[in-house]
Length: 203
Ligand SMILES: Cc1cc2nc3c(=O)[nH]c(=O)nc-3n(C[C@H](O)[C@H](O)[C@H](O)COP(=O)(O)O)c2cc1C
Image 1 (tube, protein in one colour):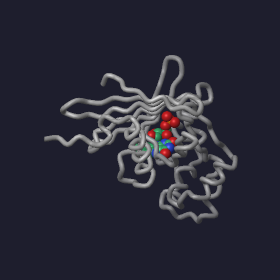
Image 2 (tube, rainbow, N blue to C red; image 1 turned 30 degrees about the vertical axis):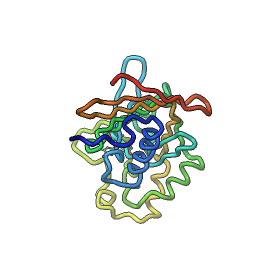
Image 3 (cartoon, rainbow, N blue to C red; image 1 turned 90 degrees about the horizontal axis):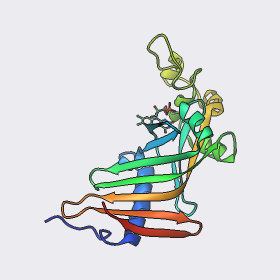
């Protein structure tokens, strides 16, 4: 018999479980919640891509990731700063859709703090001469051989800061779906100022 988790019929417990899963996604590289899909768009076009979850703040109800300021998504977000995250954990059988408004942080206190914490290796992404998505006549990583081989000092990597941004999403709602053979459960959490409206949906 399939065991029902303790949050199965309990909105408050589901809400705690959501933030526990997000925290696991942040702390554990092997957690499926570590790499959500981030979706943004304009009137008649939207696009999704995998990003690495870099931060969560339950009190401020925000989550964030890092990105190259030259990437296409930044242009999209500048014209329409609303986005969705999509998470799925197969073993937990839980899908989350997180919706919110986006703030692009660039060369401010938030980016300074985050950049300081980036590792030597992760700085590699910000050291290309051309932005991600630039067309090229040949197959390429877009990096010089030295950078490809991680043969740069931490001081040399500082130049990557000019391409670094922190994309925060201020959450307006979270939608939960739990798949169970004996009855799925779907719930929604809307943030309205200080209040969280918690309610069930038909799965
Ligand atoms: C496992 C994985 C992790 C990734 N992490 C990030 C990330 O944290 N930030 C990011 O901007 N792109 C990340 N990417 C690359 C994006 O999926 C995407 O290709 C890139 O950001 C360009 O997207 P855009 O042209 O829509 O801006 C990651 C890709 C993979 C496969």
